[in-house]
Length: 204
Image 1 (cartoon, rainbow, N blue to C red):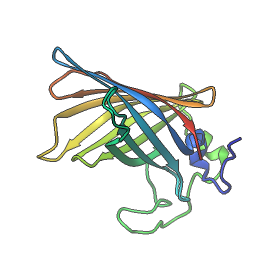
Image 2: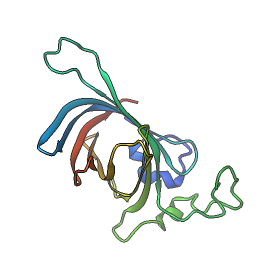
Image 3: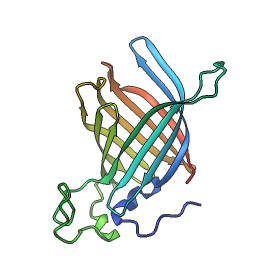
């Protein structure tokens, strides 16, 4: 049985069911024009916290060998890193910008205070920032409601050499102890469409 870490920041509690290391597999299925790109892949996902009111996110994927290839070698596919937090305005009790320390008391140190952030849908609005090494950074807005998270990009930033990528949605849910997820993207001149999904089991 998974036990929550002690001294968990109150703001992280609505997201705490994500904590841990998850591993499993997924399916890539993306239509580019009339051509469908389909592959199975392995996936290792980590959510952790460092005492601050957010979760640290890290994702690593690899391609499984092609059937009948005669090889069992896995090919690294993609990594992501980022931060997940409840949506709220930053104030004097928060550090930043940069390395500036907090200049006041933190306003959300108790569960009762965090309850004030609950939205009209009885969930919590969240901000998620995810960075890809290929020159893409995504800012998602969404909601966590119980063991389900719905996200949609509010902004996508690309370096000059990054591949075309303009929008995305992501869905996460805890079902029978497994983390299920789905990711739709608008990329390479395509409209928003199915991209990948997976099923992960907590391993740490």
